[in-house]
Image (cartoon, rainbow over all chains, first blue to last red; front, top):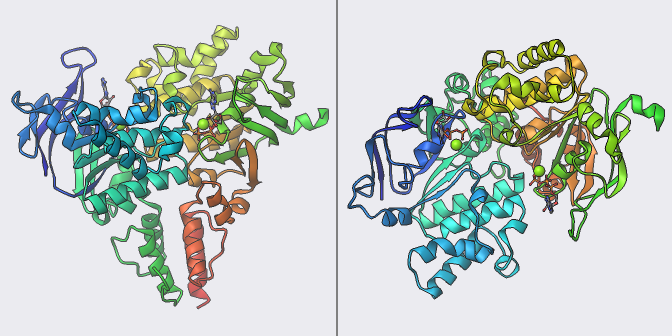
Length: 288
Length: 284
Ligand SMILES: Nc1ncnc2c1ncn2[C@@H]1O[C@H](COP(=O)(O)OP(=O)(O)OP(=O)(O)O)[C@@H](O)[C@H]1O
Ligand SMILES: Nc1ncnc2c1ncn2[C@@H]1O[C@H](COP(=O)(O)OP(=O)(O)OP(=O)(O)O)[C@@H](O)[C@H]1O
Ligand SMILES: [Mg+2]
Ligand SMILES: [Mg+2]
């Protein structure tokens, strides 16, 4: 299932004194099973763009086709689209509202009109995937959870819809390093094992480098770069000029090159640069 | 205690806080200090008690047991709360919760007006504070039209205008893009160096913590580790047990050592790693 975005423009508060053009002429195709990292400075339009992917925002002009269905077409069943494209918001815990963890996660599947047994199965399965203990937590109020637990409940609620495309807007902001690592490996597994298409918005260049297969860069409402991580992250100057940065591994490779070491261009993962340093030190990697 | 107050901005002694009806103490017997001119980082997993501790420093909460002195003032004394907030300024994670006025410079002036500072002096302080955070251009703008990083800088300016002795930043860079984060860090480092303001940062970014003079790691409301960033982060396994991580370059050094490459274990930054690689290859 693919998502095609054609000539998308979006304007907030159109016609008013505070009119803001948030997206300009976006053209993108998101293929089945891709893992996309979406980066860009604050206010560059990332959240606005991803809210178009499941029809939460409607284009000011242009169109979005999800599996061939035009979201703006009145005849298109929006519910069918939301079932396929799951969106986890920036700060999703603000959207938890049901009194218990179980009810909150069951909300989406219930709306799909599934039967009780199927709903129960999906809730348990989603909780297992995000490493929330069902027996311990299903009756707990969502407001008595830690920040990391709330984030997981929010993600589980979207997973329980079993979407084919999972869009996550800053899924790790505010999480501690262990929580972050857990959420990232959960996303990695969904992609690897279930073949879910992933679009992940992030301000962490290191997280994007460690997961994404394709990186899209936004700047003032436009897509300005789109390519493999090794190509995008080799443009350190441009990225910094847009308020972004490169992963620390790329910075290290660059500085070693400046010192005269022969480090191949395009390295961006810590393991890759580690292998190069091992060569310099005259060692073979035992397990890299 | 008296003569120690001169060198210490904050002293906490067996400091404890329990939320109403909570089964456990959120802060549990913490004894520590923030020295004059010190740059301190507080780390810890979600729910370990960092924000509660910061709110005790700022007299937003009164200790359930133990004591905290801010520039010699006991936060249990109701009459001192106002003075304490002059001495210890706090910037929260979400600037939207902190910005009150509809024009940037009015927002910066807010605390000063409430304080009865002379209008002429207020003008001087607004200009200085906005200059310090590079926001002079935006003085007349409406805060809600600013980006997240710009709002965060306005919130910092509001705290600076009060001329505090200590600035406390509770995950104030969490929502920023890499350069916004770098700008905020540069600003507080400069204020720390040039004006001698003590800084306490609470963060989940290990690379930010690595720039501090001293690091405290919280766990279950208690201090689980403390020391210079080098002392703390070289204990890679212990740090991970506490739900944290080490800076990326420290992690790389750790993996290299595991593979028999003899780099220093206490590498924190990219530049230090470059030095180590140069040292290795020249001794080869
Ligand atoms: N509800 C809104 N009303 C008016 N303008 C908005 C609204 N939401 C966003 N904007 C504006 O649209 C632009 C794009 O915002 P968007 O939230 O998409 O950025 P972003 O890339 O997600 O930023 P961040 O990294 O800070 O989350 C910004 O200029 C922003 O100020
Ligand atoms: N208003 C409150 N009422 C009751 N308990 C609370 C309240 N705020 C925090 N707690 C609890 O106190 C403990 C410490 O919370 P605190 O907010 O200080 O953690 P933190 O280290 O700042 O975490 P984070 O990294 O998620 O911000 C946690 O167990 C939390 O659930
Ligand atoms: Mg956003
Ligand atoms: Mg906190």
